[in-house]
Image (cartoon, rainbow, N blue to C red; front, side, top):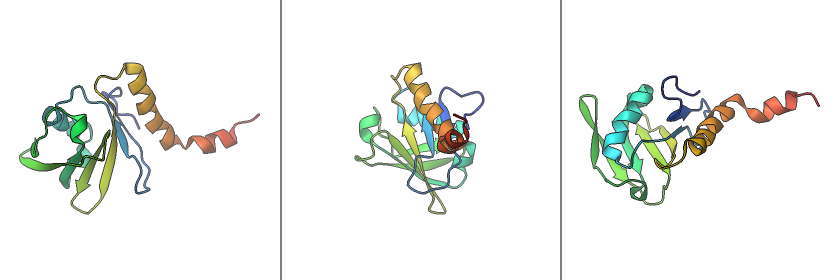
Length: 133
């Protein structure tokens, strides 16, 4: 689903397979410490039980060790080999993987990535099978 007021910045799928991309996010800048609280406002369910956030230092200009979320600090760690992804580790061991769209991307490029998340939810291959020739 694409979120209502932030359709141009965030999209999430409802898939349940592990190891897949769960959402796409187009942050407004490369300042991770400023952008993470904004992300969690878009996806409030992810902040419940959030334990740690993993990020690639090459994707961001700052490298915080924690970020404020509500009334607590969430630990962050850099993972050099996870370029253009962000992983939210939850208390129950679940990991949510977000595809990061570069802040400098054009709106058209961001829309393609964000819309692909919606198409995955709709199960496009099944829809194509139902289409009449």
